[in-house]
Image (cartoon, rainbow, N blue to C red; front, side, top):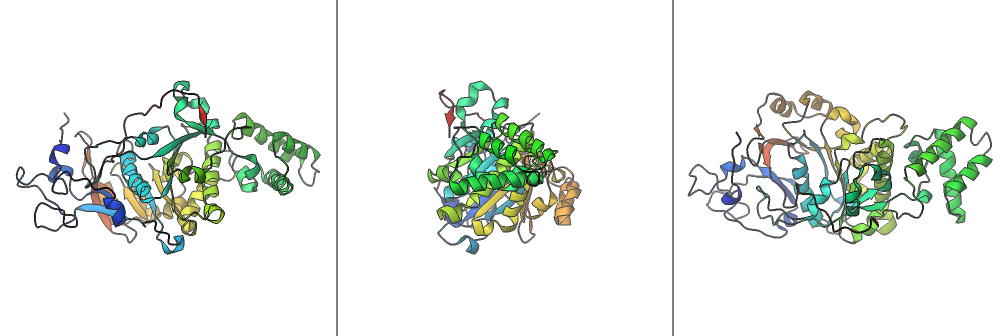
Length: 447
């Protein structure tokens, strides 16, 4: 039988009263992850003599100056150069139903409010877009006001096949621009062989240089006229097959709008992109890699001075080897964020359920790590240099795990950049997590 913990009734939790202060955590450059003790320990002292009253910067209900709020720092965007700011890269390792999505929303809300340009990659469905509405959740961080996150919700045309037509109006549709697909790496990431990928990329670059419009017919004519030295017969067959797939799946859809992340960010929106569990992973891998690659040019192209944050939800769906894909461009671009995204102002949150499902080079580039007690195979964490003490906590069942309470009481582990191990109990977000948001029905919009 489950028990119930009425947390809203005990809002002395971590502070002396139900106080809401706009921008409290943003001004401090801190993200409140959770508390050192379970929520039920923080009760009103008059009612619960064994409770723990807590102070934060002078806000308290007794004289004991302890801070039991577990936080991680982030850089406040203030016009400084990106190279003078610490990069924010966070790896979240969790299990099914452990609340990692809610914890991610806590982080997202603070960083979006601080001015970070957020792109949330939702591989599975449309759950992330629920965050547009507020929620007075049972375990809000101290001083946090419940409010939704301003966002725009997108879906590529190639994901339409797996979407109920009755909910299509909730998305803004887009495809990619053929004229910008001028690197061989992009074409190889969707299965084109090296010679053909180089040829197609060169044709697109040459057309762009003289102002010609590039379309499928244009490429087919160039392929037809190519010499054997430029393009062998087997390569021609491969190129034509991939181009046929590109148009059949509507990765490129003539006259469709193209998603420009920069333009959307100028409207002060976070961007959520839903891929809806696409079975053919090529297109999702390409799209994610392409968007990161484009975002990495924004500082030079637009002089963007606000940092970018990519959130990769359930990243194991695309950050691994996929049959028929020579180059996983999503994997290489995510790795590049961890290794050298700082100068371009790109930061990231990577969320996975198993290290075995992603490339270890990707995981190793993330130095701040949060781990759920429901993470499978804790011994695999040795491969990314997780301290043995943390592995033992996970392996020995030392952490509190109780999904039967309402809300569930689950103890996670934070591993800081300097290797410090901090067990904590996560907060819940001030934005909606559980309820689907359906917009008024209208025609399906292009972005």
